[in-house]
Image (cartoon, rainbow, N blue to C red; front, side, top):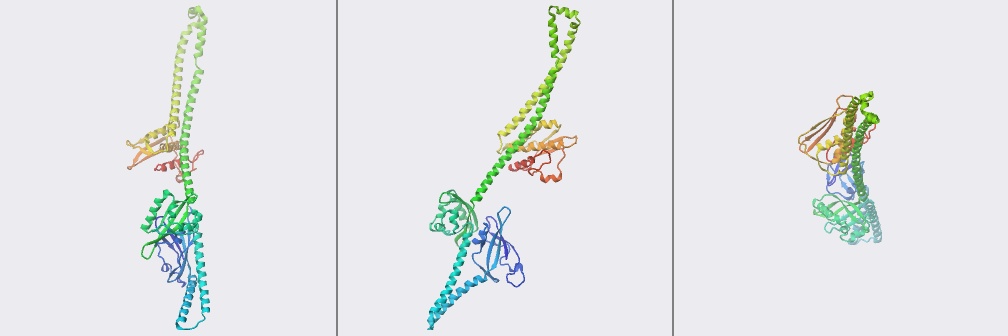
Length: 536
């Protein structure tokens, strides 16, 4: 008879699945009519065997169950999920009639012989007492042997459980039973724990005593199955993380007579969880740094664009200066100086001298025009250098801050992101269209992460527009209030759009549609939005 159970944290075990069976052995499967336990029944009082299976260990029921169809023993095995956690448990009932009957026969035989001895003594019948005694002794030995084997089987079963099976007296909080696994897990023999009253509390980690006592007391008040974690100290001071799973035992008067359960060593799981948490923190920091690397890449890209303009301006200035007429002015000065005292006659009588005033007037006009052009290029050069300085200052200001949630002016941050991409936007003749609500409140966010997201979206929009042949080259950024406590930022463009089959893969790490893309931008941006309690 197969059954499945499940255990929800903080709730009792529930019977959830049953297969059809033929309990009464009449050859007809009656299904639910033969169920000993109805589906959905909740087990408020559970034995150690059923609890232990939810810790991942196969186990057997403590006592046989007898009903109108027979006598049954139950075996339990865990069902593990893909992550290694116990998702449910399967139970199998098997016929225990022969095993129980043999014990009953042995007991009945002993009682029969005892009755015969009484009859013989009271009725004056003479019986070979030594024969009766030897037969009774043989039956007694048989029962003793069965009892010994049953006890050994029970002890072997209990000690094979990967955990310390215990029983605790709720009145004195002392341990009345401890399995042999105590020495391996807790470093002290099982007998020591039962001999010394208060040994359990004495070896609890000082920081965990109050909370553990509170949880145990709470379990007693609610009379429910419980599971708690705390630290125990081994004799050498080594800390062991323990998960205690147990349930109260209710006596005939309705009082709690004991608490039974299993102590499992979860130190490795705790260590693994801590390492996982550290890895997660490192990944978050790496993601943040990678996000800022994205911003830095954008900064370098835009600085490179501006430097192209600087190079063009400096080249034009060099060409202007190399082709300047200032050299001819020097030649004229040398000619005039060579005339000395004859200079007046040179202007009046020499053909070259009569051309000098007209030449100087034309040269003056040309030099003024040349100066204007050079000054214009110098002005461009100064503006481009200032733009580089602004871009670098922006990047440095965000590199110095970040990692903390603080009030952020989204509109100002959007303008910074546009400023970082401004050179590329201008070079590709893209027109920015802004649409900001008049009363956009500050939001609680991480400046670096928001900037990372905006820079990625603006760059993606620029690439989408570059890949499109449309004349309209618009990039829109809007900020709108959404409900009472949210703000929506939208980046839209007139680019090529997104293919429907790519929509589900947009935020997958490594997915990209660009030849030189790395598939990290949108993935890291979506993660950053989630970390701030938002979405992308």
